[in-house]
Length: 374
Image (cartoon, rainbow, N blue to C red; front, side):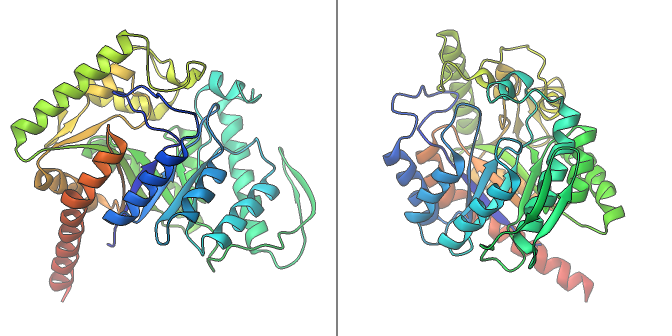
């Protein structure tokens, strides 16, 4: 199974351990991190989005303009832009980037944050709207003649996208969400289903659920795991580094900072708070079993932040972390979104020390499977 290694390009420099000091759109940071990801060998980079952030499509366009090979995963929240227009925006970016675009559809699980953009639907309604939204995206990308659409959330008359994606199969759709409503949409629409960095047992269970949801549609989605990584040349040093990250993150939160906008509701989750989204609740369920799971899965930051986003990490030497990622690969995961707590420095370290090991292990396992099959 071939693998794709995905990084992260934020609009500014911050993390759980570093308060933002620059503007909300830090052009120098965007360019430096994007170029570093390309230089060290990442295949793709996520451009994130929330209800206070810079526009992900526009940030992605700039990333594409300063790189040549790095592919993009544009986080996109359905419901705020008409799907016909969003389809043309993404197709236009795919043309300008010469076929480097994927879209990560994020329906959103936080009612308060979504209300900042004027969305007051329930979670199940949002997922129903998302399914309809993706249908229209794909019709705009593929239809050679004008089409009509009559749904619960959208009515389109003679819709037609004159600009098509450069990629012959259309723009790949990543999709996340772990609730029952989300799994149903993933089975029908996801090209790649994206999971947080859960335990191996949890990942296996969720993969099985998505595959079962996809089977009636004759579909077989790929799977991606989003994880942090803490590396050092010895196991002891790596765990000491993790302890330091937790101490710094705790101090920043105690001081009243989180590195993001002070008006971003999504970033105000308190330690011990029950998250509104199923994915975060699953991370906390794992964290309840201990701070160290499987071989080297660390839940310390997930516990501290009430699993605010991609907050679990693999801790160890590059070989140990690569082996841990290979265990997910054995379950069927072929894409890994890996980012750190110091965005630029960590990306460079991953490129030098981790990415080559992951690729070598995946290639060796694929060769072994081929030999066994013969």
